[in-house]
Amino acid sequence: MEKVGLFTPIKINNLVLKNRIMMSPAFSNSAAQGGFVTDWTLKHYEKRAAFGVGLVMVEHTSVSGYYIHGGNRLQVSTDQHVPGLARLARAIKDAGAAAGLQIAHSIHEKGLKPEDLPRRVVLEMIQEFIQGARRAYEAGFDVVELHFAHTYTMADMLSRRTNKRLDEYGGDVYGRMRAHREIVTGIRELMGDKVPLLARICADEFVIGGNTLKQSGIIARELERLGVDCIDVTVGVRFDDGGLKGYSDLRGKPTAEYQDGPNVYLAEEIKSQVGVPVITVGKLGNPEFAARVIEEGRADMVAMARPLLADGKWVKKVQAGRPDLVRTCVCCNNCLYKRRDPEDPIRCMERDCARCLACLRNCPYHLPFINDQGKLEFGNEWCEECGMCAGLCPAHVVRFQANPQYDWVAREVATAVKKLRPEQKRVVIIACASGPFRCDDGFLADGLAHKAALIRVPCPGRVETSQLIRVLELGVDGVLLAGCRQDENPECKYRHHHPWAPLRAKRAGDLLAEAGLDHKIIAYTSLTGLQALDLPGLTRSFLGGLEAKKGEGEADDLRSKETVKAHI
Image 1 (spheres, helix red, strand yellow):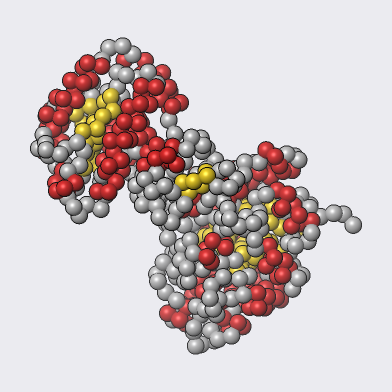
Image 2: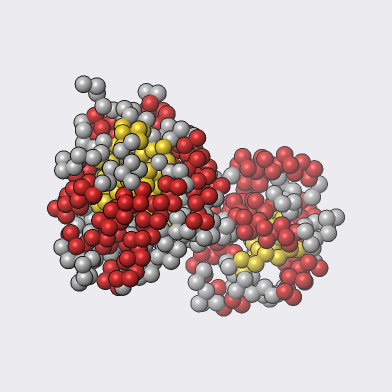
């Protein structure tokens, strides 16, 4: 009998996958308004498909345009979504992988529980799943996965902890999964038996009073009986007990302190109870361990997301017999929690880390540390998001949701600089947009008259070192980071961030000096004791410093721009 391994083909219904590695569905935050596919979405999934994954399972895609999870979520709620999804399915398949679409429904954002849903809404939801599956297959996806797990509606319906309904959609485990049975039956009646259908379930919710293997075994067997072709076994990510980063959430996204594959034993138990293929997920980025899971028959496929973000070529390197070349995922979960802005798509925040330890040395809360493996790790629990580490990071891998975006600041600067006369020294002053130092239109006009462009931000203390450097790339001769009169604005929610502003300005100045750009200036000024609207005085003082610096090196700005980039 041929030995089964990671790269042994596997058949699910009538679909043959070239290997047993699935890109696990992971929220990319890349959809356009209305849930439509974007170019970034296409590139994100196409890249993983091209690097050898057998099955790319596209992230949770909402069957509803109203009951939808937060963020930039894909939708399959209307026929208008089909063309974009068809482009996505085609891109994945042309790159060499099978294409799957996970479909889901979420009442979490609405703050609802199963018993809050009228029977009419439950019946509508069932039809939304059926029609969502139809659209997915019409778009060309090889596989549809029903998301019956984590913190979504169908998991709420299954859970003995959260489903307190008193009608036929509640009660014992068979009553709680009545809607799921009707969804699977409806899809089979509409699409036939030959389309591959997967279901993702929680083998253990890891919350008090939640489902365990006792219930999930029944659920898996019933789904197989109804015609589900493969069971994708996950765990936890239930927010009704510990919330985000609680124990249930971490079991679904195991971090560095967990052993490899801490949840494989649960998939192994489900596999012993069903005859269809079973997928396991959760910290499977160690190639040797992942291979053993398949070779020992503990699961039929392995699913991973974070390891493929850390190294998109994971599959190719392992298949070539060079697992030593794999860039290891450190399971820090910063790709999930440390996005700089709610609009940012997902990416590995560690893959370009310079290991310079600037964040460790400068963190005012002493959160970064060196773990037992000698690697840099963040303790996130008490982080105040002061942005100090983000401002100092030369590789731009430390990012926070609350800080301003690079593009936003650059766009504001570019607009303001265009209004200045090109023959003059051009200065940008970054100042506060609120409180006693609120910069009004009169202040802006005054600044233009004195050779300065004014940029108003929520707090100058949150402008990062790299942002100050990037302002210079727009043809600016100098940047003045205006200070804050904190004593006059005790209610400002950003006031505890401002002490880092002078340190970031100094760091930016040091980088300019290292790059040989002494003719450009980045400086900080405290406004304590000054008139808040004394822009002419500030500008004259700053321009005087610029005049003293002008001359040598001014002609090579294009080359200097690249030099600065090399330093930050």
